[in-house]
Image (cartoon, rainbow, N blue to C red; front, side, top):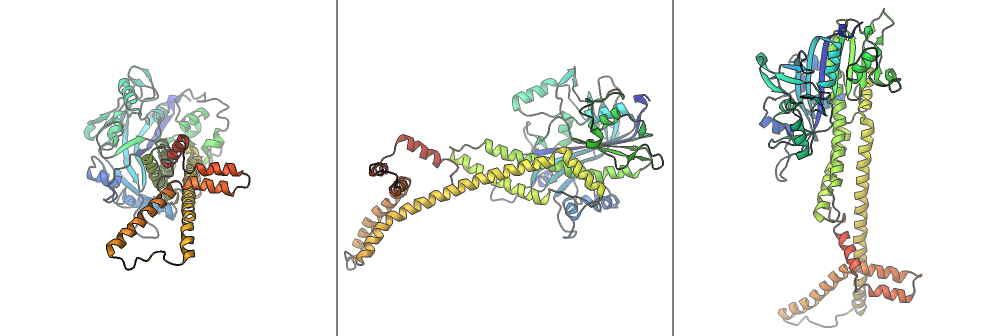
Length: 551
């Protein structure tokens, strides 16, 4: 059967695009400002959703089917309900836009455009996490398989990684056009504008976006452009995570190469070939396929639904018209699973980046740098703690398929390993700060011990005498004040000087108590109390401006 005869009867393609947000500037005297509050003030085309349970329709049919699919703590995360009742606030804040009605895609120069309807355009924010997820779902019918696979490979590209010809970005569509009511052009891609991409990388050291993706996220502004109250960066480059639903008249006609290209969203090729080497793909079915409902040899049950989990891509194939409820599951239950899985990974990458940036900016010789380092690390540790208990799920549903999906999805995204890495980073930094704090406390205790030891001599002497050497009780008040000052000032100066040289006195006391040193060596140690070398002074300066600064 020829490749162009394999028609995708129903094609649903969803992009789940995580981005990291620049932290908002907050005045210490003002209330905390949230991203969703900022967007409400200047929403542009976005509309705030008051109740995510009714985001699809007021009948709550779709919301109900989503809701009962998950465990209570996931319900509370997605919908703000659970044990607390209707008044509980969710940790997810959603916006929608409906101005983009159609996407027109030209895969290559001169190719006929493919028209896809826009079914869903959303933007999600998450409480206490500097991450947002933008969602765009498009759908079409009767699309040749080769074009469908090319759409999967090319459409979700935020920028051109290279160029393969005039105005043609590598792995990108030739042109993407967002259209509104009556076909009005809202925005158009500029993948072919090589000078723009190169100039932005050269000047800003950031990966730029095609202009139609900038339009989709507006009024949010990419960090390399001026203006905007909410700035964002890309978390992962090259490809936006995807979900794809494809139905066929007979999915059994697909070859192993076809299925691999669907699973990996790989560049199209001849159906008799494989997209990668045979050795790399020898365990494809075991590692990347979920075949609970796939048994093409058994014609009595027609189990012809197969799921693929391949890195950032999730795809499913099924028989057209046989199980229409699968489209609903793909657009709702599976969609929510994908949203959670991709958000988890994005949040972990964002936290890891915050730790690494804090360490990169640390200068142990600069007092202010040390102070800011401790502040940023503490804030990030607090955010990670809240993420760990609010968002990190090991189980999201007691339904076997949903549980299997989430585990496979998270595994393919690498979230489990990433979580352990971030946890180790947090533990290492926390242990480092604890060790420094302990050293600081030990040093302070040593200084107090030295001062107390020196002051003990005077205390013992006056205590032994047990009486006043001089009687000043009958003197005038002015003379008493002068005598008090004459005693107070030198005593205070002596105490301060003792603190200053306390480390050197401690070294002398340690040498004095050592039985392995001669008296000559002990006397030499005594002399260093009153003289310090330039080398010792430089070392003391480094310690003063190091991590032992105030917490």
